[in-house]
Image (cartoon, rainbow over all chains, first blue to last red; front, side):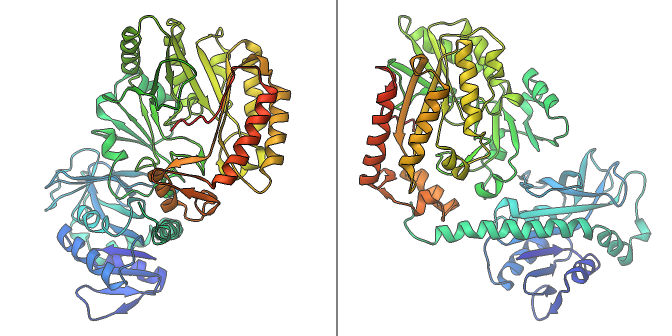
Amino acid sequence: MIHFVVSSAAAARPVIDRYGLEERGGGAFPLYSNGETSLAVSGPGKMATAAAAGWLFQAAGGVVDGAWFHLGLAGHAETDIGTGLLAHKVIDRGSGHAWYPAIMMEHPAPSGVVMTVDQMDLEYDEGLLFDLDASGFYAATERFASIELIHAYRIVADNHGATLGDNFSEDVVEDLVASKMGVVDSWVEELRELSAVAREGLEGDATGDGE
Amino acid sequence: MIYIQEEIADHERTHQILSRLPDAERIPCEDWREVFQRPGQNFRLQKRRPSLILGRMEDKLVEAAPPGLSFGARRNYVFAPMLNCIYDCSYCYLQGRFPSAAYVLFVNFEDFMEVMDDRLAESPDEDVWFFSGIDCDSLAFEPVSRMAQSFLSFFAERPRAFLELRTKSAQVRPLLSREPMDNCVTAFSVTPEDMSRRWEGQTPAMESRLAAARRLQEAGWPVGLRFEPLLWSEDWEKQYDALFNRVFEVLDPEALHSVSCGVFRLPLNNWNRLKRLYPESPFVRGPVEKDADVVTYREDLAAELRGHCVEQLRERLPEGVLYEDAHTI
């Protein structure tokens, strides 16, 4: 089982299309699912992201050690717009807390450090990806899954030389996310397998004779 | 993926190690524990693709050896410049011993050596033993770490200090490239080939280990053999007899420094971790029994296995070489 959290409907559409997800109405957040894959649209910000992840966990049956994936945009000082980076470290600027995702997948894409801030500005520190959501995603999901099963992927939408600015339309966001679905899909398959292995271990826990 | 503790980012050994892994992605971290001991890790998943963490060990540099780990000396210590093993042996106490399966390499070898000198100074009139293969394999990571090479240079100048390098690898080049030292014993863990293929993931074939041991013996280095743990399977007797025959065809028993054996056993806490990670493991589901502290084979099987192997080894070895019921943990 894999769960996606995204911050906007535009970022959600390529995922919904790829996995044939159907809308399941009536909840706190827009929810899409096909039984094996689910997606919640959180809205922007780390609080909303954490709330949506927690809500999705319950809505999807409360299954521990499912895989979690956050797909979103970020700013980066010098990286080209459209570049995808998998987070290998996520820092919450407000608290200083850091998470180190354990990347077990083959990842043909490069990785980077994501700094989650409360408000975006365009004065990016060198070398970091800036977003609004990743720390909230990790703060919530680390309670439901091991760190190997939780990943955030960022697509650069702003840098010092160029900003999408007024062109930052839903279509552009959708196109950016859609352009990365190939690589995301390959990770999703690996994460499904890793999740299954992790869940075998949980079955070991349930056989009694504990410490 | 290599995590690098900021404090040792400019250590000469860090640069050397990184130069041997030019393609790995490098991630700075404040402290090695921040990554190694992060909450919510799954050891079994990480074992599929372990990261490397370069860090600095400040305490626990050299510690007293467990009581069963001695070859006659009074002063015995363990040291671990590396945590975790590149191999994946199903029965090993390292399975889940640490929260992470990442390899931690402490680059401050000089701090380990300083404490070793302190221990030697505390016992000026006797030999002191230092065992390195408890929390890692002593030689398997040598192409990256050059750990043995560094410590051999240290021990070469201290004849009263004895070093055991315990390994399942065949990486003996760092030893063969220098003059043999009477105070360094390379101890090879040996297991019947079929059991090794089933339960010793990623280890070199037994023939490769024996060939490496023979090269060392021929070059004049002290060599030890560790039949630890003795393992049970339906045809264990046939397998161990074949192993003993082959081992003593390849190696000169008269020239062996020491041979030890001990039946499979795990401290209960370690076994519980193993059970959580691999509930279907034969070391969980097989003929094992537990008491308050330890899990081992059922008493009748353990006695039969031990009795036969000890008898076979006694027949083949000179007096004083065999250490029975060895338990390094």
